[in-house]
Length: 297
Image (cartoon, rainbow, N blue to C red; front, side, top):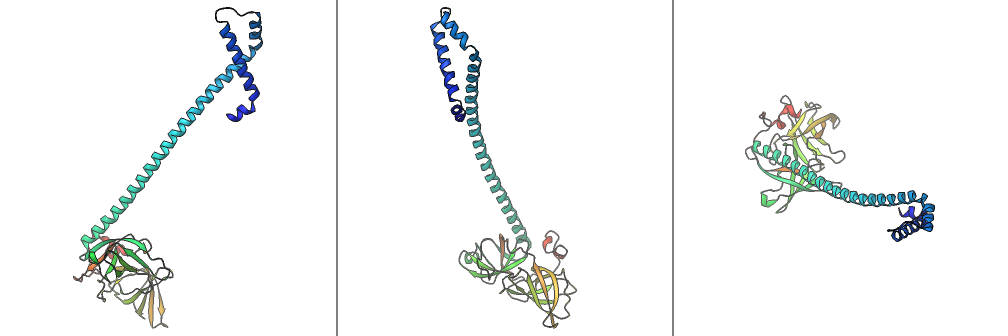
């Protein structure tokens, strides 16, 4: 608008002067007819009345439009703030709902498994490139000690407790190169044993020291053997991806894909006592299918 006025400055000044002149003539002639001079002036400038009237209307419309624009702008700003606030609360609600689902899964699993369990949340991941660890928010005060097995909410083994403070614990994950555990093929007509180790390269697990004629094949489920005093028997580790000869054909080794997503752990369970020595290789009830062989296959 200011640019338009600057561009047509002379025309604007002329219109203002004409408006002033007409106003003076009208005020001076309220109760009498125009004289010859006034009439001549009125007749002379009468063609410009329409232009002046158009300018007046344009000024009114422009002023109204500016005011309306500001009002709309203010209303839009208020709406944007409301939408932003609603988005914040919606995201917060979705996060709470997801957390509640995680807690429900933890509770369901704790009710089924005959172990003493402590729930924990992952609060940090290790920052170096040569180890795989996470920190959880439970420690000695919660009954957690070194070498206790740690599982995900669906029963998959993810690692063991490595270090403990009063309020936190460090968990060494399955895919750490120093993690070693005895594994067994879950298939009933196999039950071959091997040693499962972590590796950093691709996050996979390696099962070594399988006998040369071991009955292990792609798709087999590998679970904990229970031969170690630190782990119960039958906790799922992963699925066999490939099998190949090792040690010049004297043994075999298998590449295993871990069931647990070790890069996206949030809620975990620490097994603080499994003195019952429950065998999870035995058939499991249908109300918790995660540990059934047909589901794992």
